Image (cartoon, rainbow, N blue to C red; front, side, top):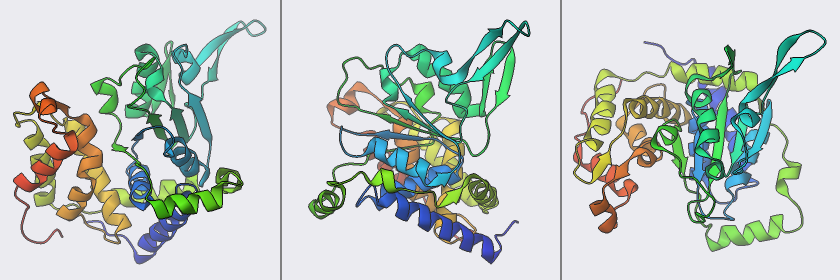
Length: 323
């Protein structure tokens, strides 16, 4: 059973603290949202930020990207965007008589996809291989993406004109989904005082780098999860497939993402082992966006978040030590 050396946990805590403090300079008063973003990064996942206009979706993505000294790209998704505009394209070189591959913006450590649901399904599908396999196939050649690799996509669920809803297969590849929500009045006042005169993103400098993040990801992989806690994760996912108000439950991929996110949550909490509370903490961000509710559930004003919370109350928590 692998264990972190003390220095490993210390490094992870200090790095996470610096990144969180850096992002909070831009996204004021939302520590839980920032924590989920860090959990997603350490779990080798991808983040979907879904909320109304003006609450800081793109600012969160940009701030996290700028806090890590690694390659960063941004794609503004529009209806006329083509798959090759994302992945890259092979261009014929007359001098050599051969085709040369020109990498697209997806070839970066942190990829910010702004308003992803404004692109057509054809263009959205260009991300499927990138999100799941961390590689790009163009023509007959496959190109690996450098680690760490994280896509932070934003979408506006309110303004539906000219948008294309993300299909279930696409949503399932995002490890977590967060909604930022409106800040409280004190946080909004602090934002007005600090940000009205200048853009805080312009002052943001990296506080970590790609090599450090890769090292921390490797450490998170060694976090211990006991057999009974693994079984609990499987039971939670399986329970979503048996509820009458659910038309499509959590996939096996969702179970894997739940375990990976719980490991990252445990590490951020200072533990080298997972407890059921870690699964509870990440269950809604990991599972809710993957569930498809029935018409009756929508009519009863039930949300996917309500269903996940009901599952957490319904499935028995394993007893005994998590070690």
